[in-house]
Image: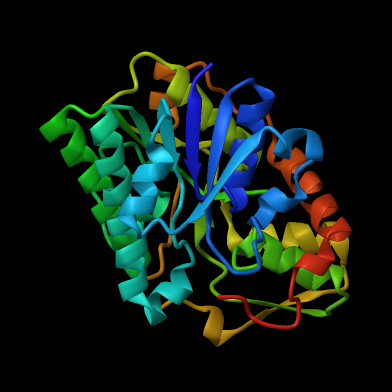
Length: 325
């Protein structure tokens, strides 16, 4: 089996991807963000039987020399390392450019030296508010936040390496992923953690935007299916359920399941600037279904149940008394 480098392996999706690749028999090198505490993010929570099979390499995606070392002797790279929180990108856009654009360039340069298969992770945020639905891969791009603009830049760099240097690149574009291990900066964990701590008032921003939510295990299987398919090189591919739910309806359903006595309160600091809010995301999954064997395996109800159960049993990982950017 191939040896695969996963950048951002210490994060939410990256840790699930690392775990699943090991379970499927791949050799995995996990590139994690260096810190003096020697912690490996969510990888620290994996079963010892899985983690013992993972080669851990610490570094910084912004460091081209370390990234080149990470790519060396690998057959493919799944590039997930990124800064992803939209509100924080309003505060620190320089860091998003350095991490998401320059970091992607470092991965592409390292992969180009070896000529290896490269999957670059995009985001549905690059589309901005839907101009038509379902959003397919031909939908125009619109940078409605510094985060989304940095990801558009990274995507176009990846495309340029495919067209200029014939690097076997695929741009993988998941719509909103949720599930166990997701941080409280995302809306589903934000609602669940507030409810599980017994709050009567659940603080949220805008309630009307809609999102297309992927359960994390379906997102991970999408990555692997794209990698294993023959016709995905040079393509941009959505991972989407092709279903949408508003944030308000989502919150009310979680309230119904966890604490029916709670109510929603609008918190102004959680709202995006008006022209920055992405009001509708509903993705097309036609292309991934045509090109790969992927099909979503989890219903929204199943995914939400597993997410609630995880957070309930791991509430100590969350700082529930502050707003997490």
